[in-house]
Image (cartoon, rainbow, N blue to C red; front, side):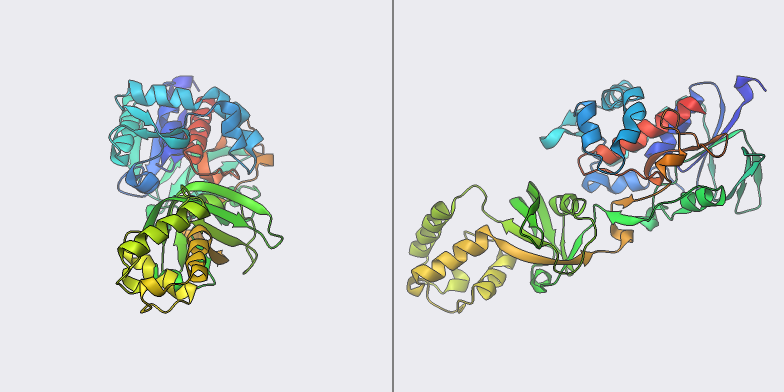
Length: 411
């Protein structure tokens, strides 16, 4: 069979699948991209709060250091198609990008839809056929790929299959774990699947009173039972009925590993720009300004409205106590609360709410230089379905693009 009519099927129309399909198509192969959703890149729409943090502009070694699970497996993928290569490709296709704090790369327009349109353009420019359908079986014979079967009974003969079906987080976007089933059915090991980059439930119930409140420019510190610091960062978070979420919380979750109730404590510094002494002076200034008011009305300049009753309750100062009667000790209690607002982690939210699935097809059974299965000829894997996951900051999407490119180049 000549190269020109080698038949490639890519299962999954997310970032890894689109990159794999376009790359294979650029080699003049007969490529079909199968996606069960009506639109491609559904999960990309919600990444980066709808802005899509496409990658990070860090050097390659730093990229790898931000992949705590099996980062070294990605050497070939990252060096074959780097973050610089991705940015150059997106720019060449007409998408302008910009770099923000921490090296995060976003589209200039701040619209994830523009990233998806650009990737779709790349797919169609390379003559990839798009098929909407649900694959239910990946078939082999004598240790090699032969075909895929769709839910409607259609059987599509092929020479190679690239599985780029994502994980099991955000199932409404189509990430329902199909790829793990295909892998297992063909003899592959799938490591335990756990949530990563996931909101946290807390033992304390007061976050429910501040539900929906987003805090920017806070410092978050996570310590374990031995009071050892395992995470520290500056950023944004949000309170929820179950506990806490937001970018800095999601990042913290990926450092925690197994969570037992009470194992980890979160300390939130609401005023990181001020020392305790400076904050005390600031509170004294506000109390002078609002000397004739009661405490519940004397913190308006210092805190968001939703947080005022929470802080007062935690301080155990009567909310109707006149501001001018607040003692020095009570003021210092307020200072400590604002600098060390503490929560106890109860557990992770369900994996369906996680940004990323930790675990997946074992890297021991995948060739890192090609993304081909070591067990089945013509079977390739790309993206989140593989047992690799990274911290927030664009690293997980770079994994998808790099592994997708390498699979598309090698199939």
